[in-house]
Length: 309
Image 1 (cartoon, helix red, strand yellow):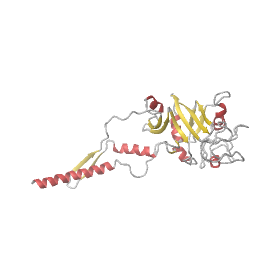
Image 2 (cartoon, one colour):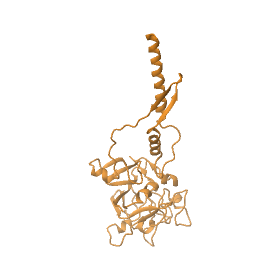
Image 3 (cartoon, helix red, strand yellow):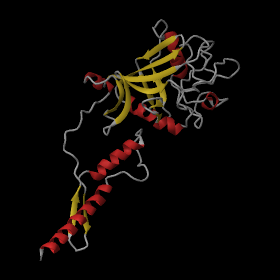
Image 4 (tube, rainbow, N blue to C red):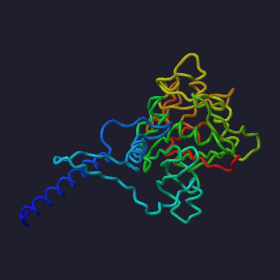
């Protein structure tokens, strides 16, 4: 075989191998419908998981025109992976920034869970400008919505999974023009298919009693309700449809006897005018935490594990 023919043959073989390799690598790019996620897993995380499984250790054979068989193996880099943190506390202990979006690896999410960390706390709700609509469906509250760098609801299923192990505390921060209030509960979890709320009952004389009793005295033991899933304890109305948002409603007027007649609902309409007349209790409300009649400017719910079992 003379030299020009040999070079053309070699070029053809190389070209075929490149085409095969490109075709094989394309199988390791995510296209098409989102895969079915694990419980509480965002579809992008599910896509990443599926892509990793598809590519790891995959070997495929493709026939080429001359009858030879070319084999392409897709290899995953053996470079040591970045540190894996179990929660936001581990990230703080490592010396990284105390604020930001991180991937953590709790036992319930071995493939990783993307969260917003505020110090040692995992933020499960954040509202500050009203840029995200919180009047959402049951499925959206279950799976989470919004932007972790802005306003969001992390997802009821994620919170249920996280709080199913160990002991967790909850902190709610509400801000009005006159100042900011923090209310903390040392026992918190949500359970069951209806995401029932459990928090430690506050006792008279405790630091947060007057500000936090609307959650422990009204919402304690209540399932989560949305406009398309009315499972509150009010037999006369759908509180989530009437008050907007989604919450652990008991009744549409709040109320424990003559106290806290304004319903608590931090997922209500952000900029709805303050109006306590009649039954018009729409808007972001936190009974007992703020000066009567003032409007909430921002709100945040955070959880942190305090011990494991």
